[in-house]
Image 1 (tube, rainbow, N blue to C red):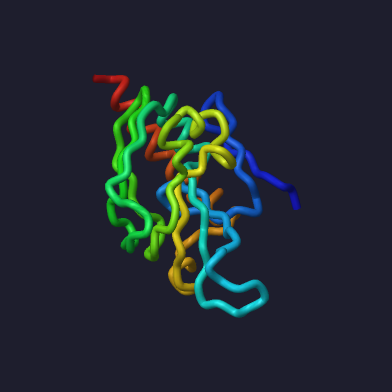
Image 2: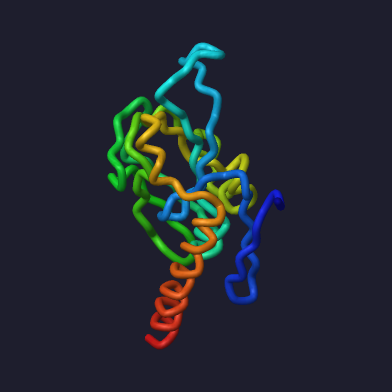
Length: 166
C-alpha cells in the first residue's frame, strides 16, 4: 500500500496521506497522543488533529486569514460553526468535523495562515478535538475519501464553470 494517493483536479494533482482519516468537509484527521490519558491505559476517547486537505487548499487558493469563533477548551458539535477562513478565491465558514472537546488551536497557523498553503499536513494543521470513540466513526478512510472526492469534484467543476459564466 502506498503512503499517499493522488487525485487529479483538472491540471493540478492533489496528494493525500493514505494513513490519515478524512471528514466530508475536506479536513484531514490524525490521532495524536493525548497528554491527559496515561500511557498504556484503555480510553474511550481519542484526540485528533485536523487540518485542511490539499483539495480544500487548492480550491481556496492562497489562504490569508483565519479566525476562530471558539476557544480551547470548548465543546463543539458535529458540523457546528467554529470559525472562518479567507483566501484569494473565497471566504468560508469552518465547521467542526466531529463532536467533542476542542482542546487546542494551532497558534502558528492563526498568526501566519500561509502555513496552510505551504504545509497543510504538518505545520498548517488547524485544531485538535478530543472525541468519544463512536463520534470518530464519521471519519472516512483514505479509500472512502477518494470516492467522496470524485463526487465533490463534479460539484466543484459545475460551480467553477457557473462562476466563470457570470
